[in-house]
Image (cartoon, rainbow, N blue to C red; front, side, top):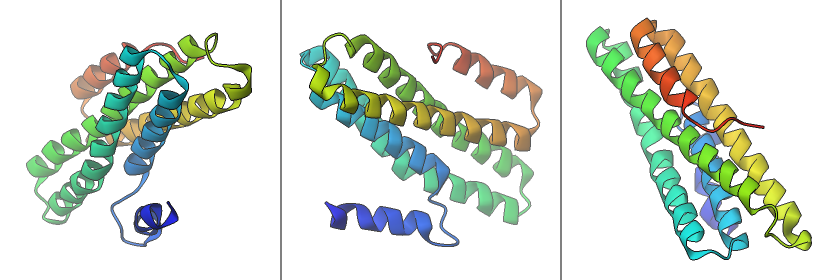
Length: 167
């Protein structure tokens, strides 16, 4: 397993790498979904968690490429391309937050049905999902501040307000 994770961790740690917070947040949400998936007996819930996991893995891959486009546009001093690419990049942590929020809700719903001996794994999944959402929201707020577009900011914040409340 270490061999499979080492390239990703090395890329996150490498100076100059565009693989950063967005990919890490997506990975945390994917881990949370995977951990909860093995604790859940209901097939429909397992399918939904598997879909969240797959979505987050795709978002992990897209995040670095997306941010690279932002930086390329910034270096080229192409304001329109920069705004367009930063809005596209902001969609990634929005989607991560949505997945992480759904995993949190599933964790809370599963509390009564998960065996007491596995509650620690359930709490670990919840903590990972909370961290993923918190990280994603931080990235979103940073991007919104960079954009300085009040209309777009309201639109993104409305999208996030539709997520279940964190506890």
